[in-house]
Image 1: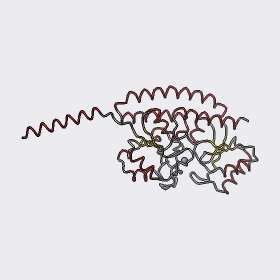
Image 2: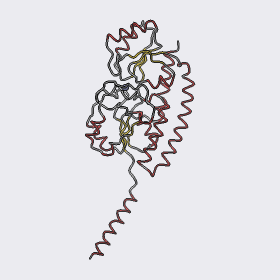
Image 3: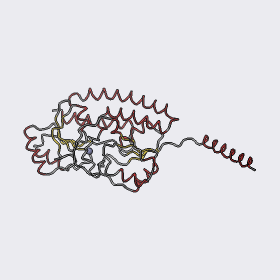
Image 4: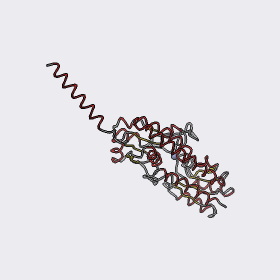
Length: 305
Ligand SMILES: [Zn+2]
């Protein structure tokens, strides 16, 4: 009696083992908070199913925790986000409602690079995601950061799918080699931008300025994370008249009215540049390259005077 039960149990265990061997590990499902991380994930894990929470036309500091996003996070094996509190206003709510244990340990890109401009003592709430007390979270605007993040992301993906470790590492190595070539080309092309002074709204491109040696001499925001006010814009106009910037730069998702007003007030001599803050939702490596190509082209043509 006992031995037949044991035999049945052993048979069942053997059958389960065979079944587990026969079913391949399902492809990863990734929830990316921003399109740039989705693009990097596509480079390293091309078979993954990737959902992207925000697009280039959206302000990534403030989005709504829509039911569709909750459902996507619920099904995800891994969440890949920026961190440094960029998503503090919406990601915790999504995580809570998705109730997915795998989405709790988020891969945060900002943990793997050096953050610039921390604002110690800056007063923010969990909903004022654009104050950035920990430092500027818009790390993807420096292509050197994408190398660092891709290395860390490859390790995380390999930990999720140990059987694919070698393939992921090979894709990383190939990406790194190509990316370093682009870096060398971009740095050569961008040499004329070194030392240029620009005005911009928010710190969206802070890492781009640092990489290229551009100086942001004015911020249309009176304080980090605070929308432009008439009083602040008037003071900027008065100070910038004496030393006009080479351009006024806005991100594509920002309301262009303040930038337009300031450009007009400076007599039309200062170009207003509206740059996309990131790539499209379905982007991969080629689009990341095109994004940096486009940023450099726009900056070079606007400041070539
Ligand atoms: Zn920001």
